[in-house]
Image (cartoon, rainbow, N blue to C red; front, side, top):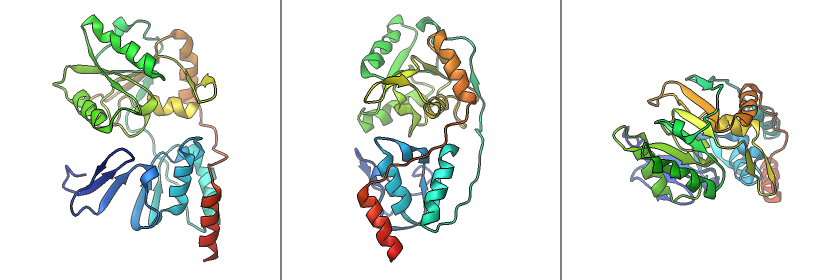
Length: 272
C-alpha cells in the first residue's frame, strides 16, 4: 500500500515500521489493538481460531476489535463456528464464497530426486535440521537456494522474499517450513512436500487437510509470474494423501480457543 502512496504502518511482534501520517495498519493478530475504533478491519486466516498455540489471539481479535465492519477471511470450515459465536454478540453475518483465481495442479508423479528440481520450486519440510540439509541441493551447481522458516529475522525474511521474486536474482529455489503458508507472497511455481508428517509439540502426525491446502496453495498464486501452480511430493508413498486432501472438504471447526479473561470481557460488554 505504501508503494501505491497509501500510508500504512506495519506492526508485528518482531518489527515496527510506522509511516508518518498513516491512517491504516497491517498487524499480526497478536498485536491487534482492541481499544481503538476502526471503520473497517480484516482478520485473515480465521480458521486459526482453533489453533492450539495462536487461537486465543484470533478469538481476542474476533470478539474484541471495535470495527463498524469486520471481514473474516479463511477456510469455510470456520463459518458455522463464528456464526454461532456472533449470534451471542448480536452481530449480523453475511457469508461470501470465492474460488481460487488461478489453477493448482496436483502432479501424478513425485519429485523422486533433487536432480529434478527446477526454477521456482519450493521444498517444504518441518524441521530446521531438514531445511539446512535440503539446502545442500545447491551444491550440485544448478540452483541457488533461500531458506524460509518462522523464526527467521523479519528483515532477513523480507530481503530473501524480494530477491527470490526478482527475475534477475540467481536464487531461484526455496527450502522452507510451513511458515510460507501465511504472510508471504512468493513467486512459487511448484510446491514439493518432503514429508506429509510433522511434530505437533506432542507427537508426530500426518498433516491435516487445511494444512496441506494452505501450503499447496502457495504455488501459482494469482498475480505471480507463474500462472499455473503445481504441487507434488518428494516420495511416491505420500501422493495419495496429498491428492485426497486437495479434493476433500476441511473438517468443520467445532471449538475455538477461549480464556477466562476474554470470557469475562465479553460478559462485561454484553451487560453494558
